[in-house]
Length: 342
Image 1: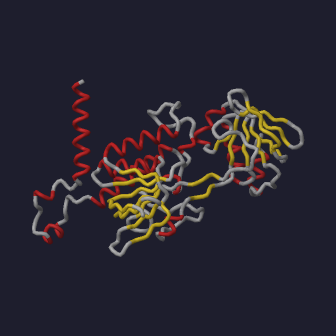
Image 2: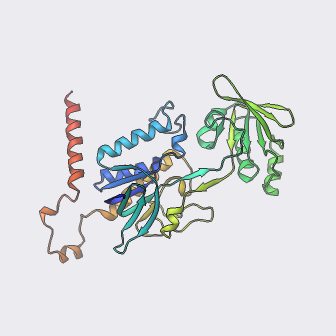
Image 3: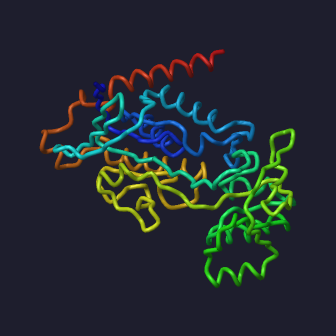
């Protein structure tokens, strides 16, 4: 039997987008929970790149754990669990069912992300020769030999983009016939990119664990410092579909500027929506969604219609924040004063 809890906001997913949304809604005075199954693309990062103020020796898990501690410190609940079903209740709220918790909430934020489609082994270690984010990791391969694994449009495009960083770029189709368009083929032929058809027989790594190169089935060896696998993405939209949320043709969730979906009260942020799959971008999406949710949930200022309906505003109605979050705010204030006195 799962516990039942009531919230104003429940975020499904614990990546940078979801945790940022939860941070904003909690600090803006709304009882918030995050339900996160764990894992995700950010958790796979050995180093953090392109996040201002965060040094590169911080791993993805360290970044996420710090964020979890932050939201819990402000009063949000964090559940390590997997949400299996979502439905709208008769009173217009949402019921989310997970293994050990049932959550009733006014707003839902879907931060469920996607999974990269992985090529068949043999493969180098993820983060030590196998990469998925061009904008995060291209800088690592300036003047280094690089591969792009895949046989579709994205593989061809990424290979040509990598020429901005190095003059040694190969596409590894691994025995598959290229599926890029004729126009892309002509474009690719005009760039100094070599296409290898043979599949990989073995991976060779250095003493530091980093990729040194591949042995191919035809017996040849090619040196690479790293590269990118471009096989597409599987978007995690089961809950969005259960709630009747509109999807785009590419499988992402369709959203407005602040993350609102086609279903009132449901938001989506992060890798499950269109855009650059970057931590700062995800954080920005989470922040914008959190602020927009706050505008819809905050009690004050009351409209004239609301004021007339209840014959004015009683001082006892303020502040419009739960006792639990008020207590956390007071604790933060005391901690800040103690630190200032030290």
